[in-house]
Length: 287
Image (tube, rainbow, N blue to C red; front, side, top):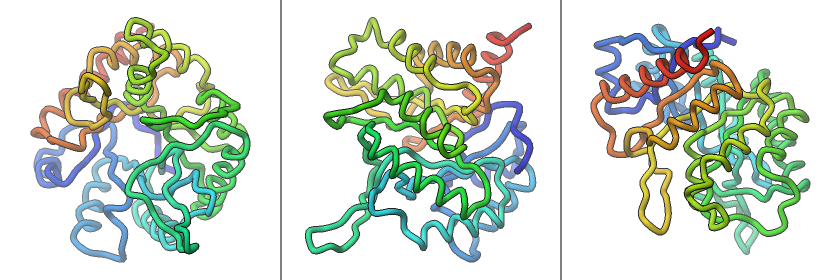
């Protein structure tokens, strides 16, 4: 596995392929969605391998469906394993969600979304088994990300931090903590008023074992009035930056990524956000 990046990175999306390679700005790392580079060759993989020659790479998946009770798709896992072998990323990650199930006639179906899983021991057993299968196939630990969710299951037996900590303890996997997701969920929780959202999020972070955290995500969200959407469409909000300070106090200088997936701005905007994250690391963790 590659050396852990010492500074912030950005999500590298198609509109910035050329700009990044032309400018080659100083960055801790780049992160791409794994599924965009499946296949034996082609232009996309060639571009990725060129970028990999200049930056540490994180592969972030959206399709494994690690919490799916019917298991994972063999083709998907094999494609991921081949991509990992070709690119040698410093980290491989996906989400604590389910995406696969059965239709009424028994045929498997893959949802076009990251669907939340219940925080109970049965779901934990499923997630642990699937994570372990991925790790055995890749011959490395992976990181699992907390989800932004717009509904919750009844009958949770564990809090989300307890659930994720148990996953890391049982499988040896790492955690990818998305600070924006925590904040969005708190704002959308009818039991959490806005004035208490920050403290609620701090309590969430305090319950996560620092030794398990491999990467952090920061992103922008949209407040629609009756709901807050984790759409990665704008700069990181003030509330998330404030929470990032507490996150650094909890976990130290963990590699941090700026995500931006819709309404993508010029490259310099992402670089500015990454530089701001680096400045906060230096400020919060100054000796």
